Image (cartoon, rainbow, N blue to C red; front, top):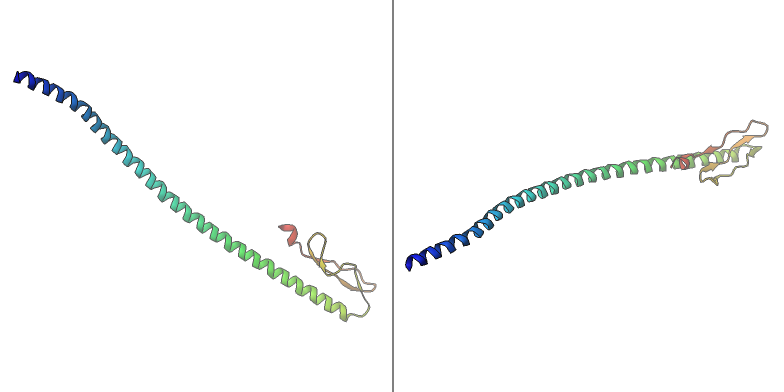
Length: 136
């Protein structure tokens, strides 16, 4: 009877070990797959940080370029206002000068214009127009 009990318990143990071995092997394989996925995620996170740094550097360069362009536009406007002021002062000093019909200010197109003064009988001069509004 002991032999039968030993034989039966051994058979049950062997049958019970097979699923445990299967589950153990599957967990090892899934652990390897999990490590591979974790490595890929770590690589993607690193790459995204590099890309974010590159984007930040490009944004900084663009901001600097925009600031420089804005500064040049402001300088141009100041020069244009200065020239306009000089033309107005000169017009006040020249006796017999005639206004060409264009006043100092903003043209209907949005361009800044200054009136041009020329002596009576002289050929009309060109208007001074800021075309920077057309370029944008």
